[in-house]
Image (cartoon, rainbow over all chains, first blue to last red; front, side, top):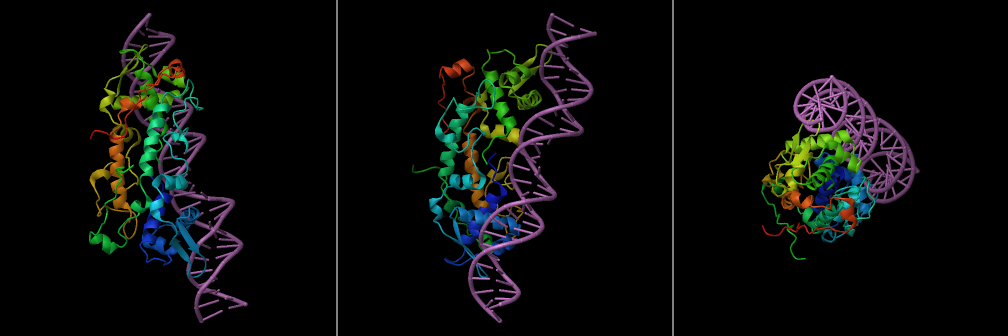
Length: 165
Length: 165
DNA sequence: CCTAACTACGACTTATTATATCGTATTTTG
DNA sequence: CAAAATACGATATAATAAGTCGTAGTTAGG
């Protein structure tokens, strides 16, 4: 539970990296893969997936690559996860519509009816709230170079506590 | 992400079921397995695992079975998950000690250093907080019989919103 | 106009983990 | 002593994640 899969991880790393470039500068898949020593093919696919989401835009050709194409403040972690990893839900019977309330009549794989669905459904909603409050902007606000990291210049003050509703 | 594995699920169902019995009454693995039509062997192991945790106690022999042996209010979801599913962390480099702060020197599988660990670490802490605030008592407070469920008698008012700190 | 350096995409293989099954031993009631 | 439980390890199967391979399309620059 609560573990990101690799492509999501690569995606966040890539977004952070791209974000660190000067505005308008292109970043190629190879550049990122080499920087972190990630499998090129997978990273390339991940970038294509980010593009599908509209997070980045691509330019073909020799000096091609990717740039950010969306304000990362406008995308939250729940959306990102659902896109990258599919349905988000505590149990399989709670896909992306798990937040639609405690539906006791919901079909359940278990005989005699599932005795935990209602409460899990409530919990699921809370998790959705939680994840929705975290923006990609916060998640990719990261030191971009080794040197920056070594200097301890970490401007991390993300607010995940679910403040202003 | 955020999906319970089957044994955790079975465990919660079993706890809810056992909880519904009159105080002191024993519940056998077979009874629960038949009630929900779960694979007996797995459920049996799950129950043994719940026993390891001290949540239930077992009685041997022909009329043996399980009873609750701990106040479910005293066990939170994070503890339960860590016991049932192992380390809880967004990324592998954040096991159960992921909450120990942003340790930049932490060994990382990625070349040039991982650029997302610090922020994920912060997020991880928030998730831990979140999960710690949910007790097993809340999670198993469930209608116990089909009839009760059909009557719509669902006393669900769990407070997961992270109130009084 | 051709080559190098890119993006794009689908098929396939391998690795890892989750789930389920099997076999056997031990304990207690009647 | 037989039946009905718990206990526990070994093994098999299924599902999913991760990684690889092959090929096609696009563009800048010599």
